[in-house]
Each structure stands twice: as structure tokens, then as C-alpha cells.
Image 1 (cartoon, rainbow, N blue to C red):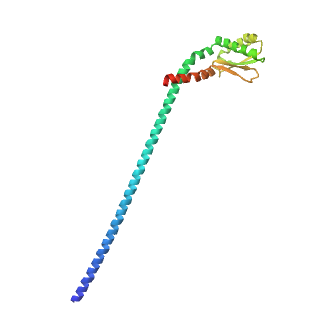
Image 2: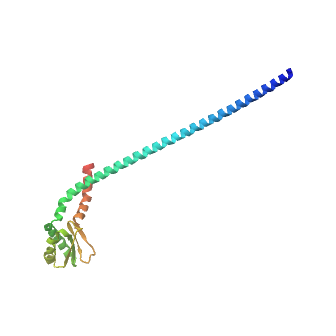
Image 3: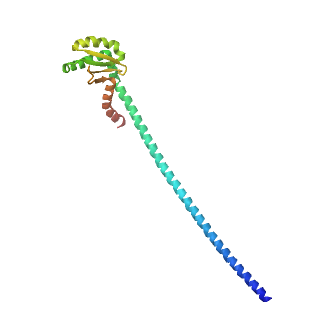
Length: 199
């Protein structure tokens, strides 16, 4: 009986010991796996935070660049606008002169006479439509008589002031319109205006 009890106790102790060892092994394995999961989660979290920081830094750089570029463009546009207003104001008296019939008659006569000494062909003029009543009799009468040549005139809404002159065959035209004058003078005024206004 004692032998049986001793054997039973021994088996029980061995089973208990084995179960305890297996339990400890399982617990250790579970702890190790848990530690690995925690470590992996921490690494992933750190990577996500790092990526978010990098994206935020990139976004900040891009935004700052966009704002800087927009402010530079806005400043340039404002400068160009101010410059354009000053140039337009400076050219305004000349544009008014080029829109006056009396002044145009003098200039057309002077230019046409200069052409007349160099060219033997008839002339063609393009004049402002708004001055047709005042200039048409001058072109057909006085100018044609002065030059002793045929002078043909057309009147266009596209010409606000000044005129275009050239041979009747249309091989070339010289433009002395207010628009052409403004462009020409504007090219010279702009550098000076920029220097005065913006240094």
C-alpha cells in the first residue's frame, strides 16, 4: 500500500513538475511573443511619427515656397501696374496730340514729303476713323496737291490716334500710331521709371 501511494505521489509530483515546466515555457514563450509585438508596434509607431514629421516638414517647406513665390509675383505685378500707370500718364499728352487733326496734318505732310523725295510711288494712309470728316478732305485735296502724287486714305477704328503710311502697293507700312508711340517710348521710360520707383 505504501509502495502504491509512493508511486502515485511520485507520478503526481512528476506530472505536476512537468506541467509546471510546460506552463512556464508557454508563459515565457507568450511573454517573448508579447515583447516582440510591443517592440514591433513601437517601431511601427515610431516610423509613422517619423513619416508624419517628414511630411509636415515637406509641407511647411512647400507652403513657405508657394507663399514666397506668390508674394514675389504679387509684388512684381504691383510694380508693373504702378510703372504702367506712370508710363501711360507720361505718354498721355503725346497721345492727345496724335489724336488732334491739326497736329496730324502737319506730321503727315512732313513725313509724306520726306517719302515723296525718296519714293516715286503713290501713298496709302490709315487714319483714325473718328477724324475721318476732318482728315479726308485734307488727304484728297491739300496733301495730294502738295505731293503731286496719288494718296489713298482709309479710316480704321483700330487706329485711335496717329497714322500708318506706306506705298499704295502695301509692300510695307510705317506706323506712327499712338499705340506704337506708347510702346516705343514705354520701352525707354520703363528702365528709368523702375530705377526711380524701386531703386
